Image (cartoon, rainbow, N blue to C red; front, top):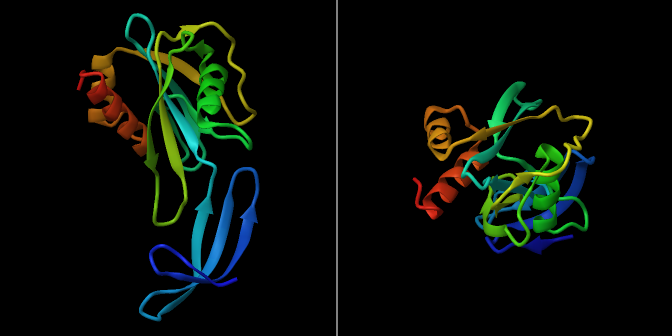
Length: 187
């Protein structure tokens, strides 16, 4: 299986060394355009994830506080989650918002905003940002076994402070928040 990529790298071989519901890791042997070879270049594969900037009718933003095992910390962030097999990013955004928070966007108010690349050096991952306007608490949380989520609401002023002072520090969420505050003219 030899193929050349857009960047001129030649993939000599490729194998999955981890393939679980939580992590898919591929090891490639590659030849660079100058002839050098790298025998263990790892790429994390993902279907991506959706991040939801949900605003209530009184302009508060829905946030979630939860434990993240990778860094062994409790973090504050926007609702978000991985895209399931066969699911569109928009379906994922609606599902994750409801499951994690119990909030649902007003009909026709879940809007795609942008797609961002997460880690192009070692992953094919992208996250899709959605704005859920008019979000109201209409459902009960339906959490996965690994989730213990506390829902919080923040004013736009609080949200700006949280990203500036590091209270919200997850890079994809900081980017999403600044992007949305700029788009809404509230930066």
